[in-house]
Length: 280
Image 1 (spheres, rainbow, N blue to C red):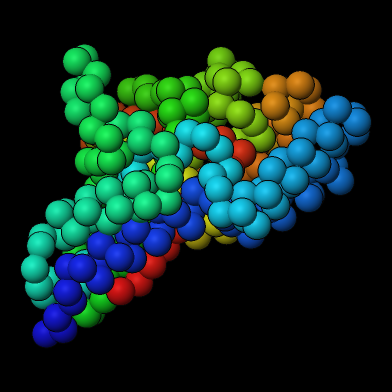
Image 2 (image 1 turned 60 degrees about the vertical axis):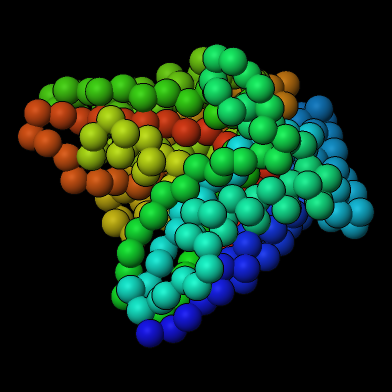
């Protein structure tokens, strides 16, 4: 049994919050460069140039890439041979979020009640999903989820008879209706299967995958590319100003489902698609 002090989790989370909101991931930066090379219009090329300049400033000055530093979402994998000493892991994560958003001068966007709308003033509580695994490590995946993109997702309970064509049509339709609002070029997370809620979780989880990594199942890897091609033919383009790069990637995650159902969820990320990973 390995003992992990809760304050080590808190400190790791604090650093993740600041790092992910201020420093663009390499896969996204490379996609900006590729997008600038592929675009035909000078307007679209200019958008990518501005995004790269913005990322450079944020990186150099350690200031947020975007003013919306999001609601803190975590995927936590906890080894069964780990004992956490001190706070519970939930308490430790939330303390880390509070420290990161306060000490990093990040915008606090969370309200304690969805209707009464009183700000919690430290961006807690986080949204946390847990999984228990073998080993003696804790893996934390952090995604600060801005709501300009979060608000443009969708979920539909398809009939099994709708099949793959129904899935494709729904995903493309969600992106079409989102238009320029989620700050394209976007990354599209798709969850297929499970229940209504599990499909949504899988769509969110899909957005934490490096956009250069395709689904390990060749069938779904091909489907990701097929949907991406259709999305980019919409012509929404960078910043919604037209172009061939509406999305940088489509990431699909699946889960077993009921014989009578075909749940499909779409979760969209803005161009920054921020996330960080730490193993403790």
